[in-house]
Image (cartoon, rainbow over all chains, first blue to last red):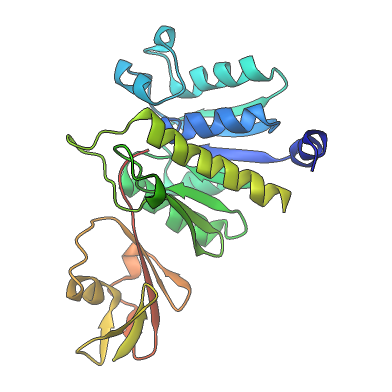
Length: 193
Length: 67
């Protein structure tokens, strides 16, 4: 498939990004580069200096809302991108309204309880929308442990499944971006099927 | 009962267990889980009510913080 054919096929697709941290910001940027033009971004946080080791933001964006800064960064890549940005901590009852129009949802939350909520809600209320989750990407190395598995009809899991973030296991740019791009790559593959 | 748990055969010393009892029986220590029985989602709030019986297929996904 040529680049032109790929762009033509995905130009009307909408990608939901649930969480705009390490996974969400990197996945969104990759998808913006290849011609996705519609995004729904959800995050409640502002950029902190500690985020710059892995998240697609810059020093002059510290203190700004992540959904706002990520929108700016994506528009610098392609000014035709349309972004619906939600600056909020999404609740289960809001998932259907906010992500219901998406062709694919990328789960990129930090906290495991938010991941659980989104999986249960999407499986119950949006069973026809593929949900691609990131699960286990802290630390470094372990390249061959990063996998993609289909856990349910519409739920795909990227990551190693066990590397939890902690004091001795920080989230770091290379491994986080690998998993973010596994998610973006799978999203593209599903859209082109 | 004999069940399939995360793609493996398991022999459990009980005739039936709720999903939560099975999680405790297996000592699954991760706090955040998503569960399916015979392909159907069993939400966290349903785990005390849904029973696992002989021949069932159970899938447990552990959710890891980080993203």
